[in-house]
Structure formats: structure tokens, C-alpha cells
Amino acid sequence: MVTSHRTQEEEIGLTPFSQQVIAIIQSIPRGKVMTYGQIAALAGQPRAARQVVRLLHSAARSHRLPWHRVVNARGEIAIPSEPERSMQASALIEEGVAVDGAGRIDLQRYRHMPPADAPDPTDRRP
Figure 1 (tube, rainbow, N blue to C red):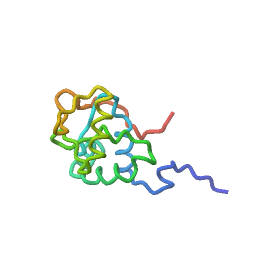
Figure 2: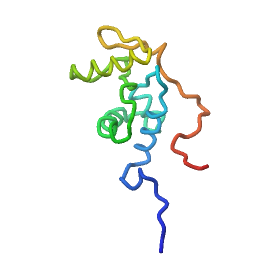
Figure 3: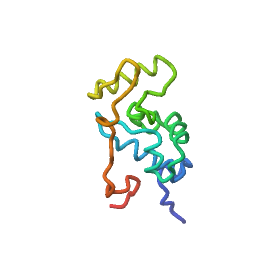
Figure 4: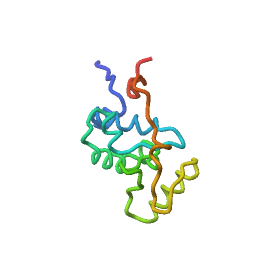
């Protein structure tokens, strides 16, 4: 009998890039934000911001991702639907992030910058 050592992500068909993106988003601390492009670059594909958007949209609930901590490159809430924009702004404000009336966040102040020597968040070795 052959035993499988595949992770849950591998079982449901997530690519290594998707696994990296999910791990990065999960690591964003309360009171901080990251941009779609920043996450894509950290996951090894700097031109894949739109893939991050799609993944966040499809996996936020199933992976319990702090989706509200991800904004566009200008520090803006990028959700076009007003109820969801308000929900994201409220969640950020609750965590201490200042959001102006146009849905903008000061990236100089609130951007999360993981240290360059941070461990790989997808490494599951003991």
C-alpha cells in the first residue's frame, strides 16, 4: 500500500504559486495591508497581481483569508461594489488602519513589509 504525503492544498489542486499567495495573505498582521502586486512578487511572479485578485476572490472564505488586508498598488480599496467596499473599510478601521473617505490607505504607514530573511510560509517541515 502506498501512502500519500500530499498536503491539503495539493489534494485540491492548488499550484505552488497559489499556495505561496495564500500563505503570504495569511501572514499579514492585524493593522497592516499588502498590495496585490506585492503579494505576487513575494510569491515569485511579480507580474501576476491579477492572479492574486482571482485567487483571493475564490479562496478567501475556504482558507479563512484576511482578504480585507489586501489593497491595490495605490493603497485603495479596489472592490467596485459599495457594500463590500464598506465592509473592507470597516474591517480595516477596526484593526486601526486609517481609511479616508475615498477608500485610500497610507501605504507608507500601513504596508506590511515581511523581512527578507523571513521563513518560507509554505514550508511545513518541523
